[in-house]
Length: 221
Image (cartoon, rainbow, N blue to C red):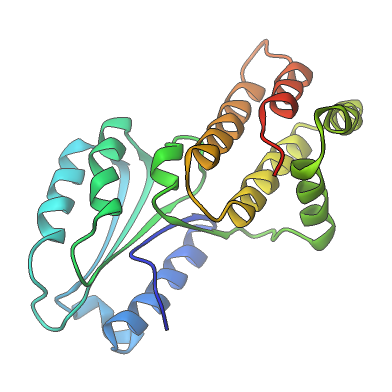
């Protein structure tokens, strides 16, 4: 089984931790029940993951495994500072041999697109994306700006913020699936969705203008 060296898991925290542990037990070739006492497995939870934590993680990541050939780090945090994320970019781009990372967060609002581009994104929310929602997001990404604007008008007419947030989440998930190469186009796409999610919840902002900007700025995928 091929495993990526880095995963970004978002959504339900308990599901995310269990998913990471199941993958870790496969990578380390040990029972999931013995992970807690295994020397080459680390599971840490933070309120905020900062620059000091990122430096310690980098130091530990390049130490040799103690018990086997591989090491696994599961890092769960409500927030990751920009400084910490920038410090981790090269670590996730060029990880030490046999080292695997599972980064867990409940939302992507504060995760840099450049960091997302270096990790495999896994969505484990209570509400999974339906086939219809997937088709809508896919159609939006592949449509020209004029067709996108018509769709935005339909969303705005309903005036349901939760539906707008869910639409942005679905766009993000489908963009990850459709853009296989994590290049400048991918980073730009994630940045625009990230900004839209941020501004759409700001006081005094116009959801219509935010989503129209998104419709015009996203590349046709």
